[in-house]
Structure formats: C-alpha cells, structure tokens
Length: 376
Image 1: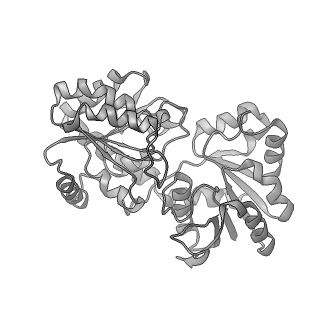
Image 2: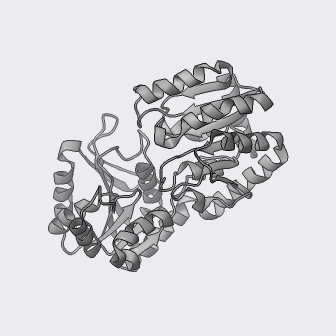
C-alpha cells in the first residue's frame, strides 16, 4: 500500500522538538515502511531539510503558513491508497476534494469534536468522509460518539506506544547503569527521586506536587522532586505560571530540581534516574504518553483519574489511580507509601515493564493500524 501520514501544523516529524503526535508517527512509520510505501507530511524546521528519505520513509515538509496548501499539492501529485490524518477533522473535506478516490483514516489524539472546536455540520461531514476513526483512548472515542452517534461504528481505540529499544527498565543492567550515571551527573546520588515529565502548565498539575512536598519531606527528607519540561515543546520561555512553580520550588531548594526542555533522544535516559513517576493532570487528559514511557522504564506510576489516563493502569499492579486528584495530600500519601516500600516499588515497576513489552510497543501499534487500513 501507498500510505501517507499527515502531522499537525504544530511540530515537525521526526520529533526533533517532541510532541506526542510526532512521536506516534515516528514510531509506527519506521515499522510500516518495511512492507509499504510511506510518506510523511509535516511542517518545516531549521534542523531538517524540506524533503528527504530516511529509513525507507519519505518526508515532505512545508512552512506552517503554507502547510494545508502544500499537503493538497502533495496529495494531488501522489496517488495514495490510504491517508492517515492526525487530529485535524476540519481538514478532511479539503483533502477529499483533491484526492476523491483515496481512503481517509482520521486519528484523534485530543477532544477535537467538541462544540468549541468543530460545528455540527463540519463534524458530520468529516465522519461521513472518513473510512475509520482511530482514537488514543476509549475516553476520546466516547467524546466523539456521544455528540455524533453515527460515528460509533467507525471508531476504534488504538492505544499509543513506546520505543522499547530505547527505554530500559531501571531493574535491567543497562537501565541501572544509566541510573547511576544520570544521578551522578545531576548530583542526586542517594536521593529518593520522584519524577514529573511534561509541559509546565496548570492543567498538568505540577503545582500540586510542589504543594505536596512538605508532607513528603517530613517522612522522607532525602526526597528529590524532579520536573522535566517547559512551558511549550522545544521552548524554555517563562510565563507567570512557570514563575509561580519556581517560587514554590525555591521554598525547598534542596528537594526540587527543574530540568528545562531537553532533546527527545535524552528523555529515555532521564527516566532511569527516578524511583517513582507521577502524572498529576487536572484536565481530561486524552491519555498521556508519559505513562507508556514510565512503564517501559520500570517505574511505578501514580496518575490522576482524568480522561483516558486510568485505562492503562491496573490498580496496584503497574501503578495507582488518584480519584481525589485536586488534593496535594493524596499525592503525598501515595508517594510516601511507595518510598516506604522498596519491594512494592520493584514489583510494580517490573510489572509495568512487562505491560509495556506485551501491549505498548510500536510493533503492536503499527499492527493495529495496518489491520484498520486493510479492512477499509
């Protein structure tokens, strides 16, 4: 098959500046391209040429302000069997106009079918125009079918994944070696490390972890709360909220470390420094990919009961779900409990790695997508 993947206009592919959708496309195209002709459309970036072929994948990039017109030109010039459009349901009609005989699959990674984002008419046209809608969680699928019941028969959940070859469990020799090296580099040898990875945004809830810190320090004075992330992908600009986080962190300078934006290739190594991973999202998270990364790194997970996050957590087996997700003391309670029980951390962390290996590798994601393409 000749397959095209269309990324959003926000970030380039490959994911040199991060981004869940960009990482998703990276992961599956490397596998699908082994047996199929794959082209990826994304925006231009100073680190990347406008056109290239790498690992059997053809990349075509257009400037952001010319992106939609560029894609239309590319679809006209090439006869694709399947076009996989990511997260832009409003674009379907314009894509179909230039490629009327092509089959379209829409993947939905966020709540893109709400009244605020798409009209009744636009949503209906999109659903009629696509063969399938694949969503990153059951939660996202439900947000579509509740408003547009006719979409239900076209929706399939395809959970995202992680590159198992780049992520090592902290319980493996390679993961443990990385762990010692990173801890030495950051000056946190001998500390109990609690890790947050993600945008420093109020909806992600990092302030709650800082508010929970006094209760954690009281029982575990050697704790180190590490934040990896910035206001936005690839940027280290500081807004009022980030300033607020830095102010809270300054109250406990010996127990808080902020690591700003880092190259995506370094993220797997940094996970290995941690003992516990926490996702404190306050919004209806589609299903944060950090869960897959933490599992692959052999870390016990504490996550909020928001959106699709709970769908990949088996309570007490690979992590814990916090129902009272706005309460800092709930995070403190679960973190303290895990820090007090190293055997439990090991059991849950090892289970998480097994979950990742069985269910959340890119090979499974690519296989699921190919099954969708081949049945339309």
